[in-house]
Length: 271
Image (cartoon, rainbow, N blue to C red):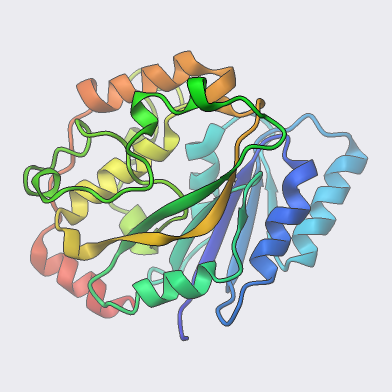
C-alpha cells in the first residue's frame, strides 16, 4: 500500500519499554513507517542509559530527540512535528511504554484508503502488568467513553468538549491538520503546559476543524496495546489532568470548522 507514515513516539523514563515499542514499529506487516521520531521528555538517565536508548532508536532507523527540560506530551509532540515536513504524511502517535499489534499500520492505511479521511482513533487493548489493580482509579467517568465513536448528535452540534473523551489509541492524522492548531492552544490559558490532558488538547481541535464524521474514522479492530502501570501521569498528576480538562471544556473556545473548499483542496492535494 502506498502510504507515508510518520511515527512520533513520546516517553519519559521509558527505557525499559523502548525495545518492545520500537520493535513493534519495525515489525509491521506490509506497511512500514517512512519516518520515526522518538522524543524523550527530560528523563533522568545516566549517559550509558541515554546511549542505550539512542542505539535502540537508531536501530529502528529513527531520530532521537532529548528534551533538556520537561515539555510534557504536547510539547514533545510539537518538537517532533517540526521534523515532519510532508503535509500528506499520516502521523501516528505512540506512547513509549506501549506497542503496536503487527497489523496496525496496514489497518491504518486501509482507513486512509478513503480519500475523505483526515484522522483516526482506535480500539485499544490494555496490558495491566505490572500494575494489577487499576480499575477503580483508572476507569472513572472520563474513561468510560474511550475506544468508541462519536454519535451523530455530537458531530452535528460539535459538542466534543462536552462529551466524554473517545479518541484513544492509535491516534493518527494527516500532517497538514496539525498546522491549523494555534501554538497558544498547546498550553493552558495561563501559559503553563498541559500535563495530563495533552491528548484532549490535540484531538478536540482536530475534530472541530473537520466538523464532519466522513473525515474521521474510528477503527473498531484493536491494533494497539496500552500498558497500564503505576508510573503513568494519570496516577502521578491527577490534579494536572483535572485542570487541563476543565480549561479545555470551560475556558478554551472550540475551533471553527475549516472552510469546506479549503478542506477539499487539502484532502485532494496531500495524499
